[in-house]
Image (tube, rainbow, N blue to C red; front, side, top):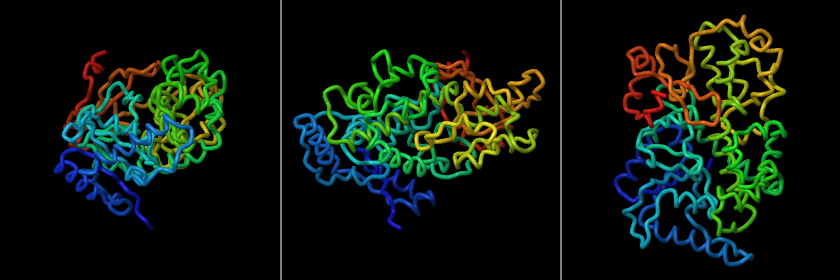
Length: 406
């Protein structure tokens, strides 16, 4: 079986070599990926992408692209600070991510170190405007939880499993090639009431008009300012599909799912409705089954009871999610039928370790989200939590720390 390619782009030789060695020490990565470094060829490679960009602006007829190393990358890893690359004009990793997404056929894009080498974002927004599909610190690159389950220790819940995310991205691209002129929200299955319930700041991401529910994928890429820059044009419909597949999915993950108000995932759902759990509710292991990215059958919940409310576009989110408003009114759920008779447990879900923990081992913070569900938890650094999770939490920087005191 041919291995897929991870392409590393950094301006410091020993650093990019270190990242390559780090990734090769992860057994899954070594089995399934070859790792290539982009060093001295960076300038010429980027010029080729910029040439594609100019050609797309200047003519409606686009010749077949000449082979570029970015096109062959299943995963592109690019550092934010590229000052030492010899160029007439300085470009950041974000600039590279934009060119790679819009003018190459690369797969997932991971940007490193724009927000620190090992930080956890307490706002829970994780920079939805970035053209990287995932923003990490370089010290997080060897975290096994990015690649496989199970995990332990620091592993933010919003992270996808990268192999599954790569496959889902390519499936989205294939889906969109014939659906670019369909409305984004309609295609995703958002009914009118659900679309109108989206917070204004979330809806505005799709377009600047007063009816974002009518925005089509093609319009989103070309006109919203969250796809192509204003003067840029896509080379063809495949490029449009790749841009839309990446940007709309990030919108869903970082602005919609993160709020847990319109779409809710399994851990946050059972935190509100424990009756949906299968198994012994007094055991924390029962709760932690819900924090899985392996698919709906692995979650240990009464999925058939709520099947009618599930978001059906599995390729667009990294985990199963449900439409919250409809579920919150479902009388078949014990907590809805009789809110005062429900037995509660002293377990809370921690966003930084993707696990439920006893509340005494956690710390509360307030996320910066357009949602009523902003009070969340991370693992505390007390002896009990560290014994359970290991020492990796000690090295994490939680930012902005003021979110702990709101």
